[in-house]
Length: 407
Image (tube, rainbow, N blue to C red; front, top):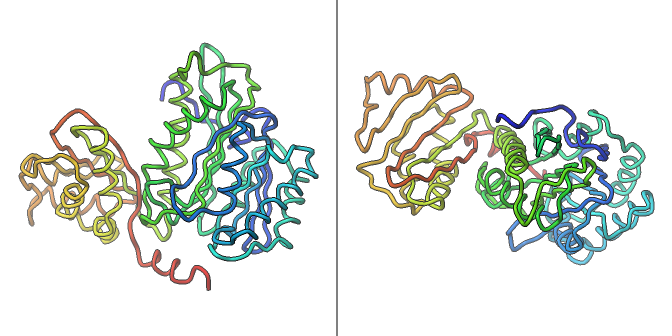
């Protein structure tokens, strides 16, 4: 994007932000400090909700977050009153170590559901991480790594944009590779900016970005109990990015780009994944149709399995579009696949199949399907709306990872 520059440093690229992370065995603990920040968050829509989600939903009503304490290895979910009490203990402990008011400390967790938090391990990790708080590039990376569960690599990103001639930065870290469904995923995402913006406008900006990014990725279609994305704005740049209820377009574009970049990292790292899938649906009659159709293709176990096997099975793609409920005419739909180098094969052109056995179209498609990235383009010829969703293939290793998750 012309007004967005990718920069190093992850969440610590933002002035006034410090982070740290540490691990002990399967447990990790990240802390992120951005004192005096206006903040807002979005959460899972699952009816089974983890204790830290309940806790943070309540505390963030004040619109302030100065510290985030997040652990991996245990979800602190389905743990009843004990789970809430453990959140309280964590917050009180962190508050005592930092002098940050307890009502400005958010908690988050990821890991196994239905197991009591090992507070004898978690609290010492909190203390160790707080003692290491720093604004270095390495500190952001340490925080991101400490949140990894079945992730194979850490995920962080930072951008700089220009708003009314002045620089503004946004940085973030995230985790999540399984239980990833359109209503967020098993994902924790912590974002910070040095922009000046109210918590009310942060909520508007964050929801818009999440709908274009984290709500457009699918790994397995299971919705988590712990999803949380927080955006903190400490105002250090002095640059106002919202006025009269309207968010500056350059700031929103930069936030969207950041969140989409993090979301794509998650989809690429889906549990057991060998291939990254992008599905763009264009020519839809409405935005809702474009979104539902693109998500439907990405969510289809049959499409995902076919891509794992290198099979350009356009019938599965068309079927997934059909059951999405979008307005369509099967005699008008077009489907093509391409790779990141620009090689493209048209499988179906306005209802006419072009990739019969022995055709160049099919041979080209079979080559494309062996690539690490497979792009699917669907044109419905029903209107002008477009949406893009991201996901990964479904492999033997996905089953193996989740068959052995708690054992």
